[in-house]
Length: 125
Image 1 (cartoon, rainbow, N blue to C red):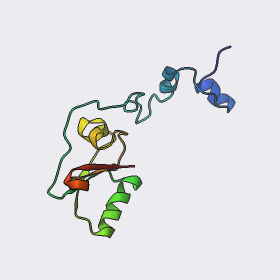
Image 2: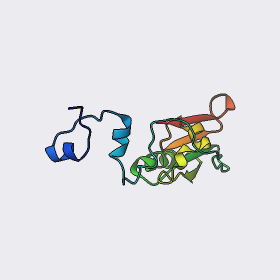
Image 3: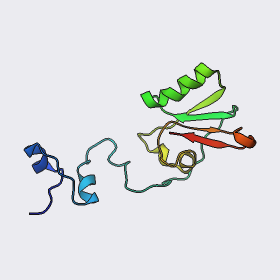
């Protein structure tokens, strides 16, 4: 027989086997809240600019444990910044503006518009 994937047979046996194809892997995520978001490709999926406030430092995140860390650090350091929500449930992290700030499409991301030499620099994990 062929290589078993992560389907019902594998779960019933209590053993995990790697899927034979990427299609089998994505088939196991059906019904998952992020099933329609995660894809095996990189790059922007939609076109939109990131919002920008008056401060030089712009933070793009969501109220998650990882998302809070940078905001807490900026508050502790007294760095002026503007915070903007990126809704990862709706896929905003895949918009061209956010991908420009973080090609990995993960929050948090930030842009310091007064970076080295006075130009903008993206900061990400």
